[in-house]
Length: 460
Image (cartoon, rainbow, N blue to C red; front, top):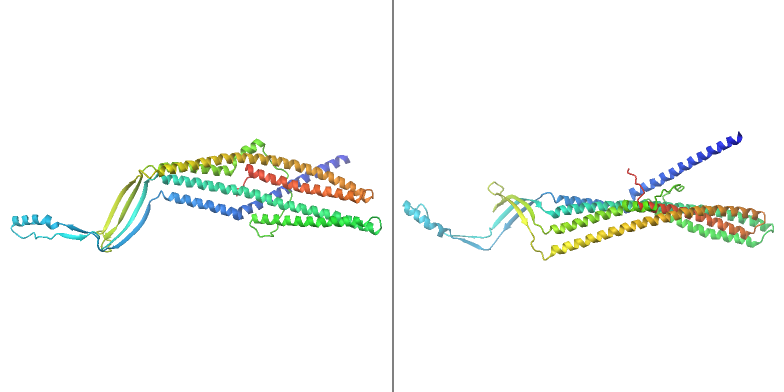
């Protein structure tokens, strides 16, 4: 009965511990996600990328504006002197007619007139008008708009690419800081062991049960540990500085850490490569760039066709600044423009656009192969890191057991100090190996997430 009760209590304890572990893991994931959200909101490099995207949207608005009519005001005032003189023989034309009329009527009702002369340019003149220009047939406007739209979408994909890379960088920096803390804790544990060993050897030396070299050996180990501690402190400060830099925070801002995630979900090798090829934002960016290059070819070919533009002018003309019904005018025109020959410039433009299109298609093909290769490498790297961590943990357990046995024998006077030092070195090395392996696994998964585009962004 008591045995059954003990088993029941042990089972309950295991369940509670597992639940607590899951709760802690979820807490750490939420902590890291909060840091990621902060970085996505405040990172300066990402803000520059988003500014480029906003600029592309403005370029799209500008391309859209070309579909609408343009209205402009033009005002001109001219003073002229000299110039050609126009002779108008109005007397030679009308005087014979007037003479005949006078004979027929028997009167001088129709007087003789002189020939007239006037300058081609009027001495003073003004023209003030509104000019309305509306493209009717302009294929390049439509193609330019579609090109701008594709480039804007490519810029958006570039922003998403950088966001995914930033997530991986933030995770790597956070893991790096956690690794430095792990090394720092390991140094502190080693220091406690060495200081205790130094204290014991000094007591033994006072009682003439050991020699002075044992004390010197401990002091040398502590000095080497001081050097190691300085290196660990440098790595910790550098990792913290880089992490705060990514989040655009002040240097020295405290960083919360915790345990690593217990589970790293991974697809199969084939699924990982296929997902990377389909989901990576780089491929979307290149797809839009290829589309833009295809449209550029069509736009160059459209230059061989005529364009039609409607133009309407309404304004006032005269020698005096007057805006009355007697001075106004209106002109409406349909203007056809057709470049029949431009020195083979259109042909050269088409060839350049075709070369650019082929370049982008080649780049997309190369990027697809490279992304699939990256996914495969990330998968193998993650598997190797997982196995390495398992081996490192087994090695640490074995090294800890060996040290426990030798430490007991050393305290009993059976094992030598050199044996104790060697066992301690193996234990410390095994601990460092575990810390490094945990870091490698976490970083490998962050790279795997970025490579396969498996990290899901928070929509909020």
